[in-house]
Image (cartoon, rainbow, N blue to C red; front, side, top):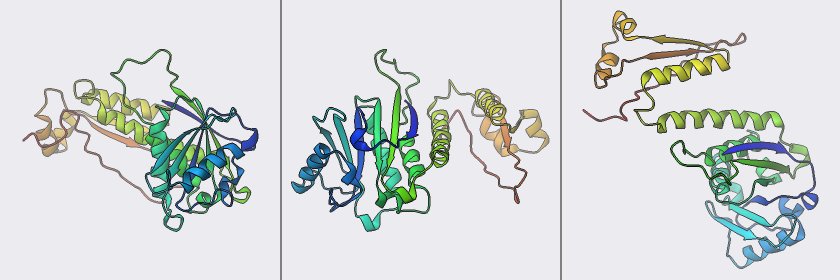
Length: 275
């Protein structure tokens, strides 16, 4: 599923969406919170649900409403728990839950309400966290599944900020999307079975990344590793008929003050424990 995300400056009462997602804390007063900007029809429905305890805003809870409001016919309420315990990870997970529900939601244009209490939760921009969680939650590994021709794979996301003093920016949304997209790429590589992702295929992916993002890529062959005395790596590789590769990706920034190295396992034929 592809997500196209933008910030909307159109008042919610004038916005036309196929669905709207709101994050609700326990004990929320709909009329006195950032949700006061909701159209009256949606506000009444959410308020009634909270009063009757059909939906209570507890962490991990959710409620899908068919509103009957022509401009926004569906609303999805996601609980974030107690307001004074809300942190970045809670918001990220709540957005992830919304992301998972998007694929089942028959809506291609979806709005998200970034209320003032969410924006004041963390030093990291709440919009960035929301986009991270949303993109991670919407991830699907369907490389081997037949796609429905009539099912749109693109969701248009519009983020509405309720706090004029703490508006999120396209730059921070982009950062959140980049972080989550990188994680999802790693998930796809990890989910791809061994017969479709051999060491040479992983090396090819690394070279593609290096070319796209102006990085340096070095791939050591088995003969190179023997010269360097990498016996342990070569020993593990003997469990496969495919020759090993050791991939080094380097990114050099002109203003960098120190060198940071990340070392990954990268064994493609086994998830561990065969011996």
